[in-house]
Image 1 (cartoon, helix red, strand yellow):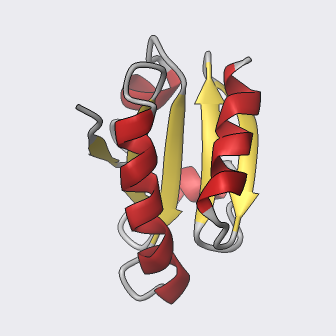
Image 2 (cartoon, rainbow, N blue to C red):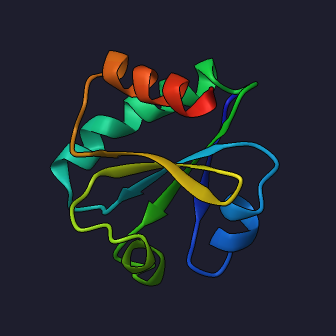
Length: 108
């Protein structure tokens, strides 16, 4: 079963960058309307791609260091990490087919 994990500045390195599979990280904040719209899509993708990659959320209000390191200027921002490197970035709300296209591209 696909699962969305919560990550923070303190565990980002171990959870995401050192992970043995690619991860999509959803940079979000509680007050962000478009973030609330993208969350159910990310949850669905976490189910569909459970065997291929991991999915995580990072609250940018509570964890400012990591978004700063990756120049996250707007939320929601979804970044796909693979082998500790950024492999794709989606800024703003996007429909599910576009998200899947980005995931498939990053998994090649």
